[in-house]
Amino acid sequence: MIVEKSYIAFLIITVLLGGGAAFFAGQALARGWKPMFKLMIYMMLLGFAVRFLHWGLFLDATYQSWRDMQGTLLSVHYYIVDTLVLMIFAAFSYRLERTRQMTTQYRWIYERTSLLTWRKR
Image 1 (cartoon, rainbow, N blue to C red):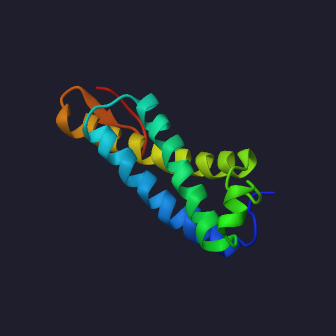
Image 2 (cartoon, one colour):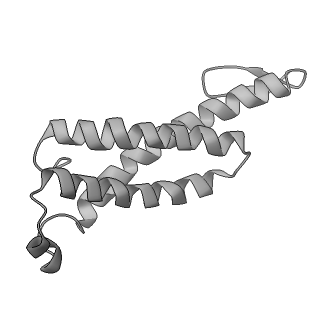
Image 3 (cartoon, rainbow, N blue to C red):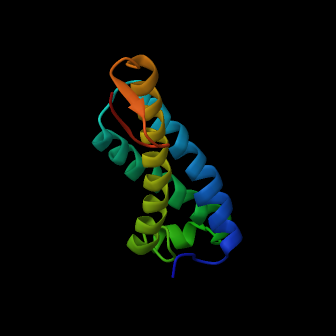
């Protein structure tokens, strides 16, 4: 199962908020010419923040559930699902920005072949 309680909570927290942050993070790292593996590390950290938002906003977060480690805050399954969604958004925007960079800054060497790829002239 992909979602915990509702698809709307998944869409709002993971896709809209987390995916938007991941998209902009991917662009920022590509603009700074950082390697892709750094992006994946940052998305794993962002995954923890998204899990906390799910738990805190939609899963009846209480001090008791935190203390007893009940609930899905520390669920590995949902963390992996959320983080994979974030990584997809981030990798897409990273590659989109890198293609734009390569074909505009080095237009005499490279030409765009599709939305996410380029080749030598």
